[in-house]
Image 1 (cartoon, helix red, strand yellow):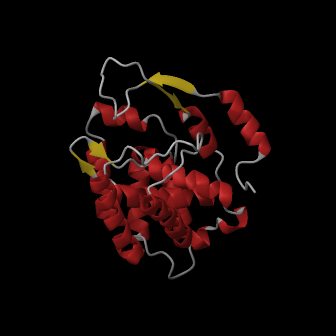
Image 2 (tube, one colour):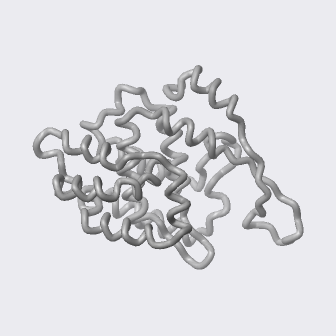
Length: 231
C-alpha cells in the first residue's frame, strides 16, 4: 500500500520525466568508456515540494544531523546525503500520513535513521526510482563501517547529538564563502525560519533542540543559506 505520493501527483511527476547524463562509474577502469546515468532531480524536487510541513520539518532536522555527524569523507570517497534522502522517500511511501506529526518529530527522525541503519547493515539501499539499483554498492566497506559506527552512537542518544545555535551559525558562515556554495544554495527554496517557528510551537518541555529565541533570530538573518536542507 502506497501512502505517498497520491496518484495525481504521480501522473504529474511522470510528465516531468528524467534526464540522461554522461558520467563514468566509480568502478570504471577504462576512462574512454562511454557511460550514462538517469537522473530524476526534477522529479525529486517536485515531490519534495509536495511533502507536508511536518514531513518537511522531520527531514530538515535529519539533514542537520547528517551534516553534523554522518558526512564522512576519506580521500575520494564520501557518504552522500542522497542515501538519507532515499530512505526518506521510502519512508514517506510506506508510512501512513497520520503518523507524520510534529509532536512526534524526534520519534520519526529516529525511525528514519533506523531505516538507514538497517540498509547499511544489510548492504542494500534500493534507489527509489530504479529499485534494482543498490546505492550502497559502490561505497568502500571502511566508509560504510565508519558511518555505521557514528550512526549507532547518534541513535543511542539523539538529543545529545542535536546541533547548537553556535554550530549552525558557524556552518552558515562557512558555506557562504565561495561562489560554488552560493550557486548550490540557489537551487533550493526552503525557509529555515518556518521550520524553527514550528519547533517553537512545541508544548513546554519538548523544545530541546536549541535556545529557541536566539535560534529564531539567527534563522531570520541567515534563512536563505539554509535552503539546501529541503532536498
